[in-house]
Image 1 (cartoon, rainbow, N blue to C red):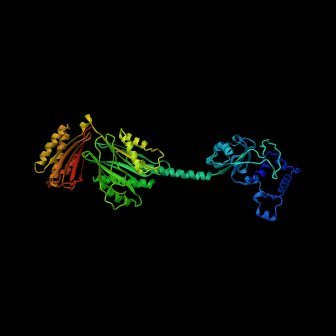
Image 2: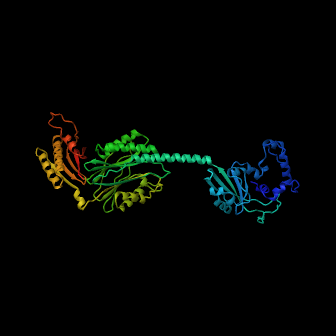
Image 3: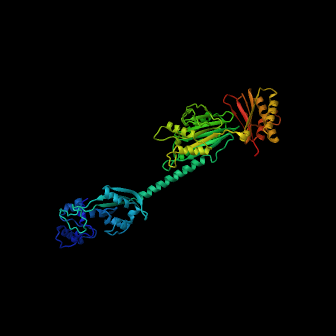
Length: 577
């Protein structure tokens, strides 16, 4: 841009005053005066033609070199201001600037005359632009009036001389001695209010979409975890940061009866409401399948088929584990999920074997179950990939980091959850969802241990099995100091379960009694895998009332097939508080 010509026309300069005087000895000034007089005779709205303009030039418009900087800047639709000197005095503002921010006086420092630059955070950039000679830009800044602007500050230099190279009068006294005046800054403010409002509407829409997904996600997760008698459990779910859409991480704890507990954690691949909805369907299905008391691999097999039917494009990982207090281990099946970690009482961390099958929804795979010890005093951790996966490292390194953090994590399950989250660097701005399920099998000593007892009797069959079972149950329940009414109900339940096994089962048979701090559990196992059904016996029937009696007197009852073949039938009585 030719600022030589423009500097001669700045407000307050002697050159501009000379340009208004017809009698000025300066040829350029006389030409400008003549042009101004000619413009006065033109029709309204017409622009004067520069001297020497040919008819062809008049038809096509003026050439760029024929326009002064003032004319160019004045015709720009964006707000433009020129600031000069170290104190950034206002030298020029165009009409668009005055229309946007109002008239601004010339010769006054920008900090006083242009308060809008402070609102736009431009004032601190002016010194930087002057010192560095490099343009600076601030994007989409809002003013007090509600408009949004993107402002570019560009360094400019004006030469204190005429177009033909002769020196002009140095009325401002700021000549540097080398023909150059002090540097200045050209401020160009583009109105981006419409773009900013559209972006804000988009952000608002995305925020509402995310809030909807988070609300749906949290509503589908357990509102309160079930707390089994023999385990202490805590879980944490943390959605990803504002830049990450909500995923389909989920967990659940399901009491199966007879002291057994199912632990579930999974991750639906994908983001948003759709992933959360698929997660909710899978979680509901897991609870339904768990009530069938199936082995873990059979539950995973059913989920695999269901996931394909829900949405063939959605793939999910899941691990389903069952804890039996009589066995002291977790029996689990994993569909492409990360391995369970178990910390022993001495701090040693064991890692479960690799997944026993591919992710849910792939189909065509026969899943199997695995086992990992969970003795008293140990802690198991189930988690999703958001806890251990980082873009900068292999996921196995993340699992190893989690194992190191778990080895030193002590305290209640919730404390362990929080420590693992912090140790793995998960913050509110994490780029993925995180779900963690911590399960502790406490080692009980002293008076607390007296509330937990086990007793078992092997039965060989025959007519003496039922009397033996009744006598055994009476002695055990009496030694456990149960009230007479509860003792009698327990003896009756043991007698009916053994009689049912003698009639419909096969040896070997076993009667088991278990007491916890909350309930009495009675269980009978045998070698036949046909599960009993509750039915209404006819008045003339001589049998078929055993399960009906059990269902009437017990708090709950159920049956399941055992891994080695055969079945187990159980019932529970809630202990008085």
